[in-house]
Structure formats: structure tokens, C-alpha cells
Amino acid sequence: MIRISPRGSRPSAPCTANPDAMYETSDTGIEEAKAVCRRCPVMDQCGQWALDNREPYGTWGGLSEKERRKILRRRGIKPLNTTDEEPRPRTFQSLYDERTVHLKDGHVAWTGAIPVYCDGAYHTPAQIAFRLDRGRPAEGIVRRTCEREGCVLASHLADQQERNQRREQASKSAAAYSESGRLLAPCGTRSAYTRHVKRGEPIDAACRQANTDADNRLRRTGTTKALAS
Image (cartoon, rainbow, N blue to C red; front, side, top):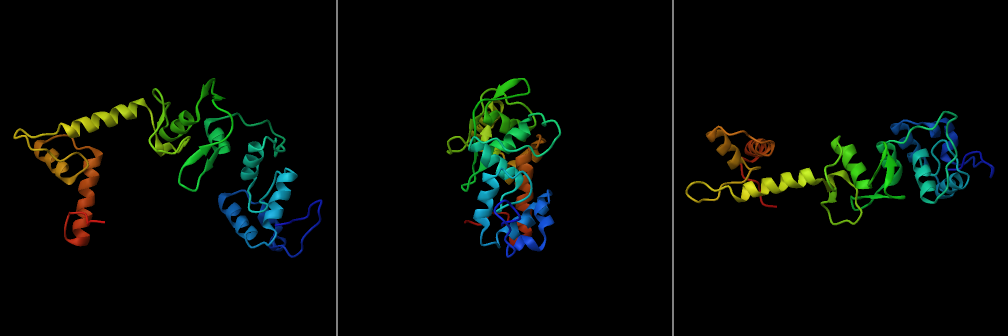
């Protein structure tokens, strides 16, 4: 997309039909502007012009303001100020938004220097991602639960407290034998839900969900057993 710029205008560009729409700042408006860009034969050149000139406003070449700022920072280039107001204070959310990249394989990578200073202390990217997702600081070291080196996707992280809870749950499941020595169904199954009910034991969320899933399967297929994939 090429709008009026030092290089001149492109009257044939789709954005010339409604230039103001390219400066929308809402999520919906930005996505609609990007859709216009994708119909333009000079989209890549337009995006490159906006980066070269550090254009602070609007959607250019399929790139939003935030996306261009992230690209410039990764290149070590300071974006132009987009406001005359005082800079916003650095927050965990702003750091995560500015310095993470979503990868095609479903993981999230961190860009820039680490650790990061925020809220009076230094933090690792994993600590920041964990804190934003869980709403609390991590206990102990935050470790990945996936195989992707450097991934900071919150669902792929666990702190010491969560690792202890998982080990405890695994230990309980492994030791769940009846008086006759028969292995009992582990939590997270309908059988375990039924056992909890019969014994008057507290019912955990995993067992409740397993029971609900079994009821839904019964209504759909006439059996509570999951079909083999």
C-alpha cells in the first residue's frame, strides 16, 4: 500500500478509496486495514517505506503501528515518538507485547536483552510470561514444559509450586490402590468421580470434567466410552 509520501502517491492503490480507514486504531479497524493491504500489488514496498521512514501512524504494507515498532526495535532502531505525552511507564504487559514473537509452530520467542528490569527488580522472560498468565509471581525457577528452546508461551511454563503439585498428584495416582491391591482409576476419569461420590470424598475439578464429558458422550453416542482415534 502506498499513500502520499515523499516518494509520491499511487492513485491505483486500494487504500486511496478510503485513506482514513488505514489509520484506525481498534483491533477490528486494524484487521480491516490489513485486508486492504493484502489486495495491493505494492504491499511489500509500502511496508518497507514505512519502516525506512519510521512512519509512526497507521497501517502500511500490512504492518500495524505496534508491529513496525517491534521490527524497528529488533533492528536496533528507535521508533519515532507517536505522542507528545510523557512516555508510558514500563510494565510487564508492555514488555511482553513489545518483545515477544509468535512462531508458526505454536511457540512464543522472546527478542531483546535479558534479564529485564521492571517494577524494581530484574526478571527473566519466563518469569514475566508466567506472572502475566497466573496473576502472581513465580515461586522458584520457571521451567519450560515443552521441547522448544527459549519458548515463553505461558501454558508451556511451570514454577516450583506447580511442579510440586504435579509430582504430588502423580504420586497419589500411582499409590491409589484399594484394600485388595487392585489399582484404582486415577483422578481425571469417570471411575474416579464415582469412587469419590461413593466414599464421600472431595471431588476435584478433573474428575468433575471427566464425568461431564462422559455424560455428553452418552447422549451423543449411547456410550460413556471415548471412541478410539
